[in-house]
Length: 439
Image (cartoon, rainbow, N blue to C red; front, side, top):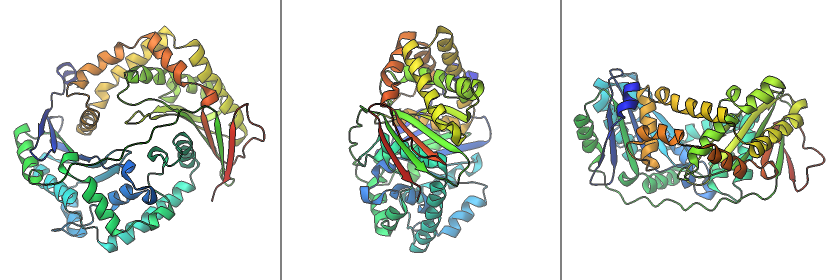
């Protein structure tokens, strides 16, 4: 994989006459191919009264087409040992799989059929609805999930798409029907919104020819994506306790809205977050709260910059008796990083780690495909793999410390605790406290 980094992935990018983008990369790592068909149809596209619509579609899109029923689709996949994954993020809906190179053509034909002509039979909708309700109930019984969902709702209030549950609620699920699913598909599944990535032991020319054959005659209007509302900058600290008294562990989700993927400070923030605790034991949070103080079963930070300012989330799982001490320790660690800054040694180690992890990211066809999809979505350029080490290496101590001072302000944090814990009776100055019982 070192060779790939030295010489670049160098994929080919072709735009079909109907607007579909085809990105192909020949890789002989194994006699296999990864196919990733991504549409700009994520859960930000859910209507406010039908939250979970995109996720629901991901569960039924492969349950029949104009020419194939669910059983024949399953047989076509199973006979070739292929698992087709349908995943939904905030902004994308992706069908992806790994297959033997010899099965490339029939599998891509199948993905095209599923993408373009799903029938979504009523019987399959009823079955999947029951499965999603069960999944939602399981989430509602999981403190870690409830803590994160509660945090996102605080960070992105007033119905902002980033603050909504990706699977929806039992109530919103009841309002989703076949006509709604069909309308969502008609509106957001279009060749102009398709990014097709093909990585594996398939010749570039053949990959392009097959892609043009199965997607090139598809007609559709340009996708009209919803306009995201602005993300409010918090002025006060907000705290929420979600009481789940039958649990043994309390889960903490603590965070802030930060910046977009296109912000020039993205790379400085990535380096700073690595120092803070992106990989748990390797960062300040893990070293202090878990290792030295022994207060947490796990603790780490996660940074997700996308189209709108994405969240920085600190996660921790603790004994309920340690909740307040753990939150205070997080406050202290973030305030110290903002005030004193990153050290020269931490800066060097973080940059070395992030640059050194690239070969692991790109050592599989699936890893390369995911990287190329992000390149395309965020318009990073086909040479982003070559430029990324330099962009990270160029981050200065002043830049890393500036984003720490700018964003790590405990007085403006949102803090959610889910588990056998009740909100403190008294909050810090300026805090807004809230507590709710688990349904």
